[in-house]
Amino acid sequence: MKLGILDQAPISKGSTAGDALQDAVRLAQTGESLGYERFWLAEHHAMLGFASSTPEVTLAAIGSRTDNIRIGSGATLIPYYSPYKVAENYHTLGTLFPGRVDLGIGRAPGGPAEATEALNKEYLKNVFANEDRVAELMGYIHHDNHTSKLKMSPLADPPPEVWMLGTSVKSAELAGKLGMNYCFGYFMSNAGDMREVLDTYRNSFTPRKEGQKPQVMVTVTAFTAESEARARDIAMSSIVWGIERERSFGESGENDGLPSVEDAKRFELTAEERDNVEKRLQNMFVGTGGDIAARLKSLAAEAEADEIMISTNTYSIEDKLKSFELLKKAMDEV
Image (tube, rainbow, N blue to C red):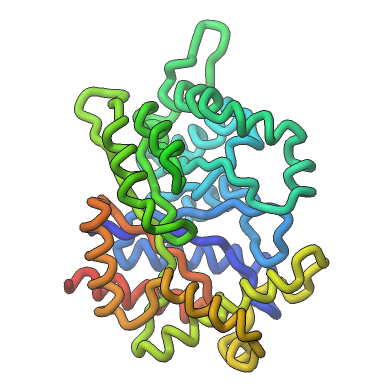
């Protein structure tokens, strides 16, 4: 079973964005040494707790400090950008790091309305034109749109591997129609829809080249530690961070940043928030390596997935690295 890493470059309280980006590089290097298939960076805008607003820039640094692991975006938010420019970015990365580059695309805003307005005032118009814009992008990635008057340099050989990130039948249908790979966001969706979405993708899949087959990846949130209690403590840091952001919605947000495990334990929750915590934990994979590995194998079988991608936000980079180490070892043993 292939495993991948999805990182959001979270900023811990008391740390800086620079620390978070260096931690992302270190995580990619560790993932490579452990045998993870790929390392993706998410895209967020005007969110003080995240340092990954321009994944393509950070990926260049990560690519230069790794050798084999695939690197990519999870996801490039296509309504903000010219499809031609996105293709230029990722053909350049693919030329620098041949056979290692992924382009994951999505259409979520990835930040507050003010950031959306600042990035592209025609965002909603582009969302409605998403199918045409994604098709245009695929043409540039696979050289179909290259004419005597419109050329691109450099052109990566092989071209970047393109993934659609989504949770809906609509996104699955589009990915299948355009011959894209599909990544289902289990960590951000109603998991009950997964089977319908993935069936739609496979049933609508049209190969872009001879022999191409549909490829499915499922992304989950997981926290692995040497005991279930420790894994839950680490997970609570991330959950409390989410609750803090919800409480400060609309404010400048000095508390935007992952709290330590100790601070999370001292955080006072309302009765409603305690119920919410339990619901969030149920949608995560939290426990020892053996327990999580068994659950992930079961999920992969249910989804008929080729790969599982893991998202893990922790206050301490050491806890994050240990979580990925324990999980990989357990998955190799199951």
